[in-house]
Length: 227
Image (cartoon, rainbow, N blue to C red; front, side, top):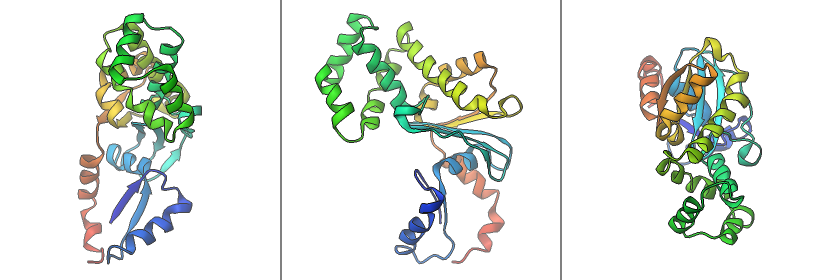
């Protein structure tokens, strides 16, 4: 079993392995973080920069075998640039600070059945505020032709590149992406990358296909695995 999961830091790997072993009678169990999974799916055994853009964001520089550099994502309050939560935060901030057209503001509040009070409740008092913020980010995609909306998306991607990718050896490596945000906003992502001089490689909504290819190329390893 090859397991990848968010939050699978080295200190937690043995705990996850034990949980899997309690359910499956298998000796060979490999546990890694979702970021390692992204690197395997996107870069395989080649050098590159692997990025996750979904509810949150993450990235690393990959040498074909392991990560050589990683900028901490820091979560949606201090970081997570380029993520759905970050875009949702920028949208809400602009909306409540009257930076969007009144018509657009009213359209958003009506569509999501929200008021300023319920927004504050969801962000500051209820659990999982990052999920709430990410859940409203589709509004940006639905209204991407609006210049103010597109600028929110571009700012989020620009911050992601400047504060993460551009700390890696991006001039000599392709930058690859996996995740729903990267997939659905692909054209804007490529536009901002081009402005920054960043070469985009693969953009995938899911890592599954890439992981299948990665392990198919490692097929001899399976022959040595315990049944």
